[in-house]
Amino acid sequence: MKENCQTRRMYGHNYAIPGTYEVTMVVANRRPVFGEIIGSTKAGGKAPQIKPSVLGEIVLNNEIPKIHMFYPMVEVWQTCLMPDHIHMIIRINQSLPEGKHLGIVIGAFKGGISRAWWQLQEATVSVASASEEHIPLFEPNYNDHILMRDGQLDNWKRYLSDNPRRYIMRHEYPNLFQRAHCITIGGIRYKAFGNMLLLRQPEKHQVFFHRHTDGVLTENTEFWQKERHRLISAAKSGDVLVTPGISECEKRIKNIALEEKLRLIHIQDTAIHQYWKPERSRFEACAAGTLLILAPWPEDIPAFKSNYERFHYLNHLAETICAIGHKTEVVIQGLCLGHGDIS
Image 1 (cartoon, rainbow, N blue to C red):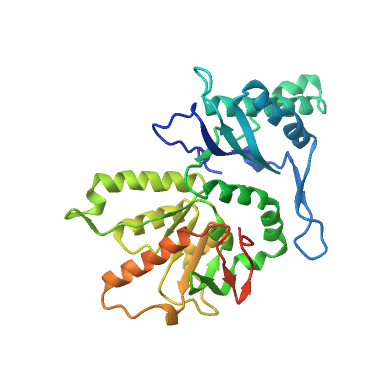
Image 2: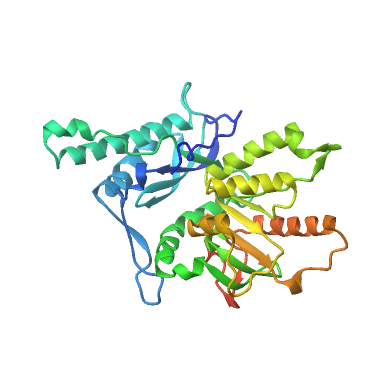
């Protein structure tokens, strides 16, 4: 994991006042210290769930309740414990005491877990070497999403509840994340190559730039500088960028996402045939699980009178894909996977 990719803050937002947040904390080097995911998505199998380790049990039974104990105005609405990271939906019901904010709460929570981990380590090593084991448990900082839009909270609740199932699916059905002959979204059929799970990521951002803004090349404007920073920051926090990458600025964002292995859905109007594979940069991103390439069926693409029409049509498709939530029906290869089975 790249340094600081788990940092996302809304500049100017007051994190001490009432609000609802999705927070993610990741273990350094992605060590599976909290347990293992067991179960199966196959018929008759036990539903996928985490089997907590000793440290995982401490997190669930001791450390999470402490948040409300020390900060009565803060509630943990939902928790998703995974082997190497923790998701929580946190609600601040009343303003925090002076000098306190969400970062202080999360820092104390991570500190409590780290101390428990160090104690467990000390129980299994000699006293002489125990002090050497006090290395950081977590990646620096954490990632947060402010849940303000209609449906955003519901999408994140569903996403967190479904996390163990998605984890098992990646191991049981690896081919599902590589190629699909037909995905139907909003009545448009696509061929796809890459990580299908990106379609169900709760936070997706359309990358949409005209070539010119107020008569000036967009890449020379302050608007471009601000939007580039916003989009790349969102992608580094784990959100998905969606774009056909047509205009110069769209291409620049797409290329940054590919180079830095940020999550990206790329819409192309060239066909994906049976033996088609993307060029090296996109192929490596697909293999890393950070890219999904969608190509509308030629039969579903209208005859464009100009490149301008093509530009707006593909960006309209990007807008539709960004609107996908856990209730959106998505059909793969003629088989309906329901509302949320790709997540």
